[in-house]
Image (cartoon, one colour):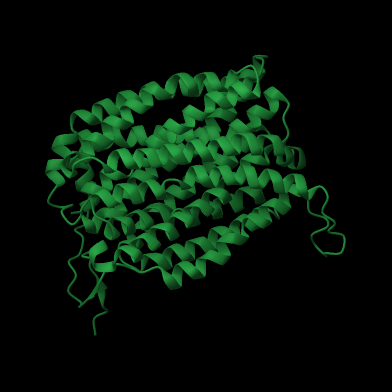
Length: 452
């Protein structure tokens, strides 16, 4: 007997607005927890370096290359799976896996063991974005999708900010913890305890995700049209004048985001003599507030567009925002004092969050339903391979180079140099994509017609 299959015919009308927004909040919370587990390491760089005797380049590998390579390898297979199985249950399984891997990082005893744990986090987190974003596209119509995506894309900023603020408070509080009566924990260092604690929330939320979030795809009989072999490559190649420069732009945007999150806390500590708690509170709050407000503002602006203009408006807003970000992003690392640094970082993060929150919308709108998770995975692969991998490693390498040249504040100069070079390239790529955006939308309008 044939196994029942899924189709992609459900929208918010089929599932109910309440179920649609409940699912949106649930996957957004899961994405937030993934960023807490991913970014908590950036607050603990100084302690981990001292404990394990690592260089800035090795820290860059831990936060970048070792993460991105395995994230890339796992993304497309998990996206293929997401186009075929119950997506909330797949997300729940990923949550359990990355939470355990985060806890394992807290038991690391050298560079190799910590890298293996980070690889576990990377592989497990790879399944969430394509599954969740394709789920949102099935739950919402076009205006609702823009708002839902903006809420989902709060995660990098809320999660990254909470990793800093709560992580900083926990790290400061851990100095007074008496663990002498707890066998096995007394010998752990403070950074190890923080990583163990960071893995717990995901283990608690995963069962809720699996049991209470609805899968909007309807079960049908055995006749489900199969996706043609090479269909994803065909979609990308047919629309290459838009897709390729756009994917490069998004990948470089993620490079800037990961460079800021991975290294800005350490840069503030080194340049201004701050400790983990002070940086966690200051930079963490700016990251949350500016990131959240930028993300929600972008969702409001895009959601106000007429349906036929939404794609073009999204790309042009991203280009204009990139240009506006160049000045504050390049000046912030070299600010004379912490107040000036945070005052410049606030608009930079506001703008960056707005751009990134819009980045998945073009493929959500236009990719055929049977390819949607895989198309989003292709975008995620480009972002992970270039952005997640290159960002932290590039800054670590530049910092070591500037230090060898006896530069003052080499890490701050590395962040400034990266922003000053990469942001103009992003603006150029988005200008190229914008020239083909109307044709791209028209070619794929019928395939994306279920997003009414």
